Length: 272
Image (cartoon, rainbow, N blue to C red; front, side, top):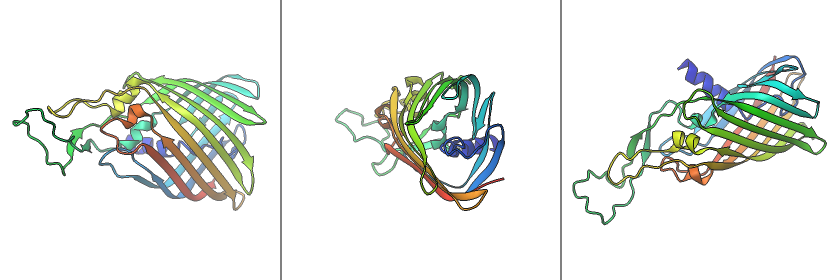
């Protein structure tokens, strides 16, 4: 349970980075916490949405690299505008599954196939399937470019613990600016390999009429915005919105009910 709780806090804090809102001076630790109300849609069948009330902030940026809410990176190249890192981070898909090991899946409509001996589940009752994939660490290369127009970030990561041996790539384009507080807006896409998708969202055929689903590579589209309005020297109002449109390789899984995932948080952020 402590490991699960730690991973949950790290995953919930993933959209809230000190670097994104320029709240952290170089070569200094930042310790803080955001208290408020957060809501994360859970796209899985028979899983409740995730509500949370605090988000930790632990970050450090230095010449060697940085640590920011679970992301750890080591600098390979930095000329001020361009940075290349060795980067690691937590696999975010595990957050949807939490500590539950059963998922309710509505059985498909009975076909004309002769299956009089099949123990059909009544249509109004879900078929429960055992499915509890674990979290894992992803590691690889990350690149950032900052210009007057905004920023570009690229990541290419692979499973480091051998859970699924899958790959993950992400692209973000965004802009940080000041207008009645500190803002950042970004959009991009996340590519997930077939191995990663199958590990989390694939199923095995357990009964005659329910075919197994083998996950395929997918591209998620992502749109995000953060706003920090200072209320004092060390505290302010924080609003975070993070929307995700799941790729068809994930959305077509019988484990998934919703294709759009929204993560929202509003609260007071305090740094120490």
